[in-house]
Image (tube, rainbow, N blue to C red):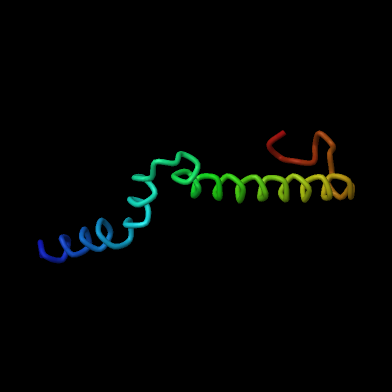
Length: 73
């Protein structure tokens, strides 16, 4: 059973994380953080999309905003 878990370790450490190890060893800070910038751009785009959807829903006036509209109020 130990060889199974060592095989999983070898897969992740030597194969799947090899590109991240290459990024970590770069001398250029901007190049090393490229993946972080990509994730930040995706997150920012998703945030803007979600805020626009919330605004569109709020402007349509479908929601009942009375104090008794929700049971927890």
